[in-house]
Image (tube, rainbow, N blue to C red; front, top):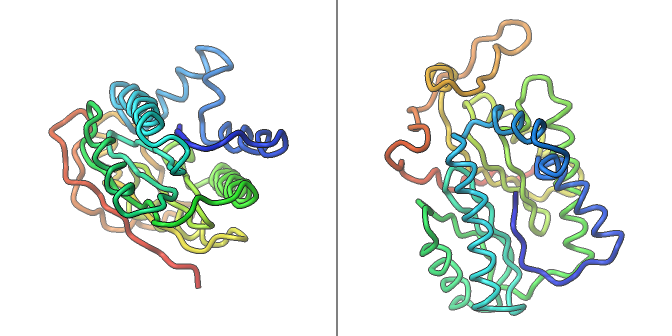
Amino acid sequence: MTRRLLSSLPVASLAAALLATSLAGCAPLLLGGAVSTALMASDRRSSGAQIDDEAIELRSAARLSEAMGDRVHINITSYNRQVLLTGEAPTQALRERAEQIVGRVDNVRAIVNEIVVATPTTLPQRSGDVLITGKVRASYVDASDLQANAIKVVTERGVVYLMGRVTPREAERATSIARQINGVQKVVRVFEVTSTDDLRQAGLPAPSTPAGGAAPVAPAPAVAPAPAPQPEPAGAVTSPVR
């Protein structure tokens, strides 16, 4: 779930935001323990990491709001204790200060700071970003060769950020789908890349072989599952739309 620091939205934008949030896997938590438990079980993070990510987002949003108020527009998204910061800050000093504040939150192991030094976006721009996120998420749900719950999607100014623990094939497939969505300017990947075998050995949901029996892409070096010793941050890889 992504925490946002922004002003109140009109009713139409709020409805769109709720739709995109529900597609991202947050709204089912309101529908009952059984759905919530099923989502946690299908996640590629440990239950402890999932709980920590929620706490990191809540605490970071509260501290940034207290320190900066409405001078900035910042989204906080945590996956496996790695935090992605997106949005806008009017000065470089505020951009850096935001990273420092979030870096002091308990259990944060790494930060990818994608905050842009600029004036905050307008409500119509943010509503457009919400719709893009919803379209990307819906496309992942429709894709039979992707586990949609393994990928978090955040959109800022038409830039789509992807987080999650995926195989190399899944990373390429998710990127390709996102790049085809109307309005997407580019795709930035903040993935933790692992192999199907490592996912299975860790007892985590793993992808099946793609249709047609195609051999999977050779795996990248394994990333230790949480809460193992903290690995180096995955970083951000940009994939421009051409």
